[in-house]
Amino acid sequence: LDIEGVRQQSVSDALRADNQAKESYKQIGDADINRNSTNGFGDNRTSSVVACEKTFMMPRENGTGAKEGEDERMLNGGESGGATVVASNEEASEKDKLAQKEVEVKFISSPNGDARIDIEVENQQTFSGMTKEELMKYANDPFWVRLRWLLFVLFWGLWVAMLLGSFYIIYDAPKCSAPVPLSWWQQGPLIEIDETQYESQVETIAQYGAKGVVYRLPANETYFIDSDSVKEKLEKLIATFRSKKIEVVIDITPNFVTAEDPLYKLALEKGPNDPASKAFVWNDRATLPNWLSVTETGSAFKPVTASHAILSQFGPGRFDLQLNETIAKEKLKSVLKTLIVYGFRGVRLANAKHFIINNSGNEEAMPSAEVNKALTMVDYGFWTHTKTTYVPGLGALFNELAGVVHGELQENGFLSVTEDILRPEVFAFNGTLPIDIPLYGNIEYDLREANSSNVTRKLRHDIENTYKAISTYQTCCGGKPWLQLRYNNASLQYLGASEYTIFNFLLPGVPLLALDVLTANGVSKETIETLETFRATPSFQHGQFAVYNDANASAIAYIRLKSGNPGYFVALNLDPNQEKVADFSGIPGIGAELTVVLISNNYAVSGVAVKTKVPVNAVHLSPKSALIATYVPTK
Image 1 (cartoon, rainbow, N blue to C red):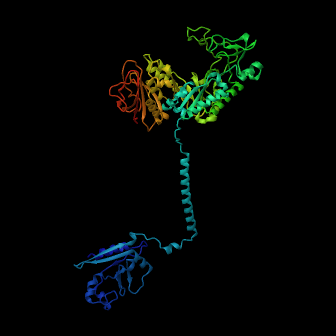
Image 2 (cartoon, rainbow, N blue to C red; image 1 turned 45 degrees about the vertical axis):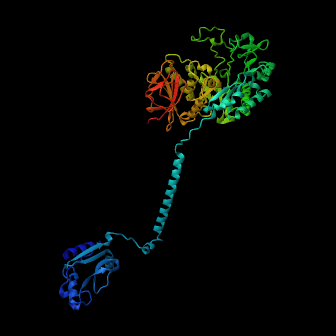
Image 3 (cartoon, rainbow, N blue to C red; image 1 turned 30 degrees about the vertical axis):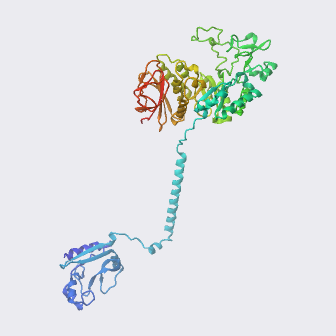
């Protein structure tokens, strides 16, 4: 047993940091063990016991040997588990007590007489901290009291700040508002009805899923809607379709009054200088300008007195109103309000370009060189009509009229026109187009006259230009104008009704057509129902729109797509004789495979039907046919 090495190791581990003197131990000799008949530990035992334990009896030395009488013994640390050396005739000092808590020495004997010593230094393994009694001495110390309050306030202050901060982040984050659903008049379709037949058509119109019908009021009745006969007729019309939950739109012709109108009679009685007469366009018979009638041959002015004539462009007994004059404007506003009270939810205005007249009395300018050479100076189409059409001020006038309609109906109603506006910038007002569903563009013309060799490129160009021009404006309610996609039987002189309808229905806008376009041309109710289902999807209502030609420009197609939803692919072959195998793989983001969901009546490709999958780079299209397919967009 290397007692000296173990002794030095135990002393090294037990030393405190205050540079106390190093302690070492040596084996106690027999003489010391037997001195005073004791074993060195203050008890009387036999020599055999003493001999067994003499190995553990060691006096303390301080480098010069142990002094006589300074017997020391190594004690177990008791309850604390520590170990120290205590003089037999002295009480343990505070330092020794601490040492008892810090070092634990274990002696383990073996059968061959050797011993193994395990020493564990407690303060190298754990830190017990202060006791409760020691801590309580500082509980009411001012410094610690202030520190505790400071930390308490800081903790809850930071917690509340983080909570408020999270609320602010949520409040201030960019809003991703849900897309506004399309109004009933944007969803469509709208069906034009005839006054004499609509009662027998109600059930069929409902079966085709029409959201509204359009009724054209006879022009001469526009300013007599409060008469008993007209009022009764209109209320019956509304009640008939309301029973099927179909809204009613009315077409009126507000740019002239008849000779029976009270305002005209008052103006005629008072003469051209009376305030009531400002509603009409007067001129001296001796200096009449060269304005021509729209519906008759000859001058647009009709003599009403021996020296004066009044503008009458639209036939006998009809006198044009100057609708930018307050008295005429208020007359029209009164009509709009009355129609809304009756229950109409949309109003279309006829002859919109004629609402304001430039009453300067000047001659019409000579036409440009592009005028039809077959026309002469007595023909209405020969002249430019800059004094009677598209006169500045139409935008402000329509803005006021739209304010009346939307002031009563909000988003549930609309104001529109019955003819192509041709020049949307004239109807614009401060960056808005106060016509909710304008009729504009050459789409209907291109599909009707689609017999040229370059028709697919021209159709794509006209579609893109139409939507580009309209999309630059906002409506007075903040949305975008919604195009009228109007067609009738005359539009079908080239394409069949099925092909025209399938291609037309998913364009951005509302289809507007007569009922016999569907019933007389074999367009089934199931086809219209399917198309209306497509129009109700997010890809149609809120998705992007883009039009393309195939790789050879032999066919035309467009897509409707909203992120996170299937895309819709609509293709049309305008060739009357040849089947096309069109490659549309150049469309950005389109999937490699299309799933056919609807085909037109003329589609007759072997092996292709609804639910068939076709490759996007080889879409087979029969002559003069159309199809709709869905696809999964690529990222």
